[in-house]
Image (cartoon, rainbow, N blue to C red; front, side):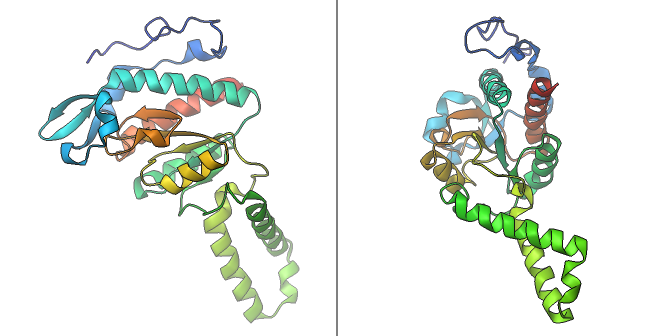
Length: 251
């Protein structure tokens, strides 16, 4: 595995090429950084999904080692697509519900003013969006009433009930409370863990992207990034690159 940075020449992307974001030349994917972040660690060979075989560089101590050159290429291609989407005003919904992904999913999405789900997937969020939107609006109305003191007119028992409802709504809808339309992209930190979300997105015509470890069916994604999705450092590396790409467009 080479440890040289991936640049536009190595990936066959020349600046100004059709379909390439004007910011794409700023996307530097460094192999050394990826290796340090543990991006290349997969799962045990026995857990390998057959369709991930082309992205495996070697097997060490019965663990699949991901080809980081391909990771770099796939990541860069997705980042260019993401930049083009954001330039057109598009939004990306982050979905990271595993314990090691919850905090960083929330932090990254909030920094980029993007929606996110870091608890259990909201069944029907995409396929039944208008109904979900009404529930979000109800949550926002209750929250504003509490902040303004409007709930003081209710009895203590009623306020306790409303507070419980607000807590439940907050856990479910806190990350999508600003959403008023279906996002253009759904980014899954683990497509295998979020297969329902992937299927809903495809059914709704939403582009699916995700981090695919060696136990994931890459066919769940329109844009797949072969990488370790169990390690916090690996997840952070990829989300940091996403953050850099989006912020470069918003400047």
